[in-house]
Amino acid sequence: MARKLESNPALVPFGRHVAALRKQMNPPLSQEDLSGLCELDRTYISGIENGKRNVSLTNIFRLARALGVEPKDLLDYPSAGEP
Image 1 (cartoon, rainbow, N blue to C red):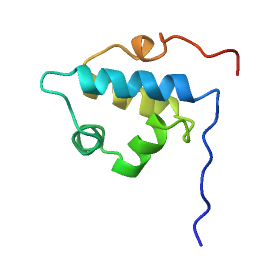
Image 2: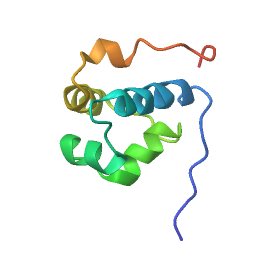
Image 3: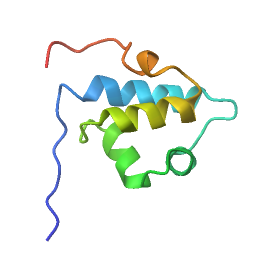
Image 4: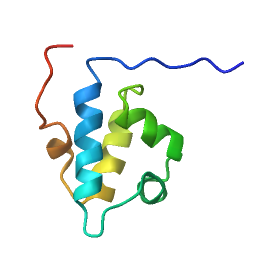
């Protein structure tokens, strides 16, 4: 039986930021579109956006490239507090 991942409050703001950037693309990208561009599973993208996945540096670079931003821009988001 698969373990259900819980949202991590420290990861939620990052996930919301990724989702907002994805939706701001012209045209907006679906999670499936983004996953294809990043070569990551769609459920992994969903996990990131829901604060359930702690993203590796490699995947931050993949996400940034797919979203057309610099990796540092992915980390420049409003914080909900210190992790």
